[in-house]
Amino acid sequence: MKRLLLTLALLLPLAAHASTNLAEAPISRTNLPWWQARFTETLAQAQQDPNAKIVWLGDSITFYWQRHGGHGYDDILPVWNHYYAPYQALDFGIIGDTTSSLIWRLDHGQVAGLHPRLTIILIGANNFGRVHWDASMTIPGIESVVTNTHNRLPGSHIILVSVLPSIRSPWVDAQTATTNAALARHYAGSPIVTFVDVTPLLQKNGHTDASLFVDPRLTPPEPALHPDATGMARIAAALQPLVEKYAQ
Image (tube, rainbow, N blue to C red; front, side, top):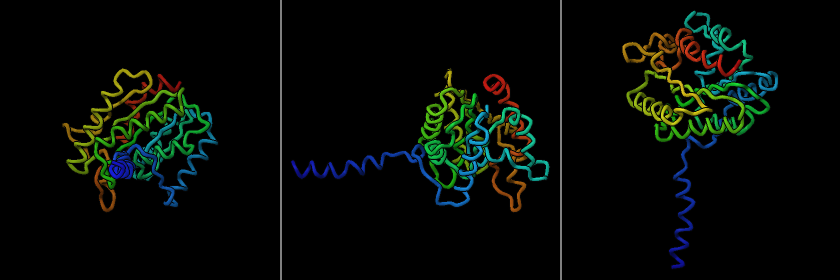
């Protein structure tokens, strides 16, 4: 009996570790100098603009609000300036971040000292990328981001934007659809979180419209993931009634 109890005691930590969902665990990317520099930059921006009424949290898609590539289709900064600059909005998007990376940022002061009226979250696309976390991991990961954000910004209404459609693989399409359907159900009727599915805005005849993305126009072309100026303008216009409701 003692030997059995000892064996169970040794196995319990392994079982606990195996049950950990990495998508909802804080994971740092500070080993990447460029990432650390960007995170430090966002912390400085928060100190410089403590009266921001809107905060955007996300990955490279959110970071793309600041893109001004000079080709028209990738001049997205003017869209940001039109819809969000009047609210002293802050863009806390970092390239390549997963839900776990954003959770780590929140745990390490990303929104400290801020009191925005509205927080907009767009995260999850990278969970289906290199780390290959499926919907069963990503759904609680996104929910953890939302809960963490609300705990730190209790006075802020949250807009949770759906994981955007992309043209990467049938597997990614399936995980994206499953994730968005689950989030829509989870936050239906919530007084704190408004879930907005923008998928149709980036589709044509029920399929993701590659002409609304920057990536296929790159040299060499890449899979459609980041909406272009038209796509981002569609998203901003769709969110605008909520922005006017909560951020005024």
